[in-house]
Image (cartoon, rainbow, N blue to C red; front, side, top):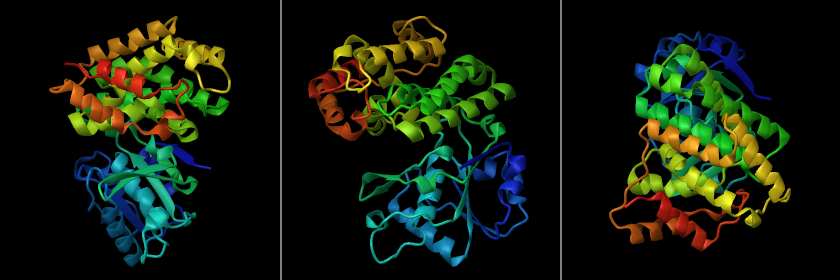
Length: 364
């Protein structure tokens, strides 16, 4: 069972019984306002930061060699999704044979303690069983229950100095995860409760967080992102995420921005096509879920919720990508959608509907 602490003051408590720490952090670490708290731990530690923003398999291999050479027993991941993903993979692979590909070996719990300290409020990676690395230029989704960090430490003061655009993108990723998890075919009573907390909190505090940068709003948004991550850990993501990945690589939009431009268009399509529902609980159940999400967004109908979402995007100046060659780019985007992610979506999307949706998402 994961332990979640509120505040960096709990780091020493989290390190109880640890002897030597492997600190995985990105290039932002020297500028963090919690740097001294982490460096002040009363334990020997080794820093590993030799990885790219979209971490490579080879980066993880370097980390494993250093982790084992230094004989560490605990990993602390500090940073955004990349740092936490690298740390998760080091934990998972560190006791495997190094004479063949780690990705092809059986995944087992290594027993290495993993502590995650997120520095953004977005993916909720500090509480999920997922990691992403790249091998031979291809994205590899790594999934195992044992890589859910043993401890997550949520320290909202790290959000105070984030660039404004990054705050917008990561927060919208959290909101999209909360909404997608709620309507996922894999949703449970537990995941829906997490989604509800995440969506309601973001809707209440987002303006104060984005435009006033208050301590209280940062606390609420960080907690909301964690709840959204816990929801997604149960359900996995759906169509908006599946649609977003190629938008990020093709147009250079950060992940949260890319997901957010997809979600209202896909939600509109689902509202207009309830008979295409593939959730075993039925289309009436799904329509009810859409209304529940709307209520959590403090509006009356799902149509109002979509309008509310679009208004948020406009107020934050998060625009849709603009095409230079729409036909060709839509072809590329349509072929990129991962059908596995679409299996979690409550409404069926065929090749024609995927293409038509991209024509709406991408502007000329």
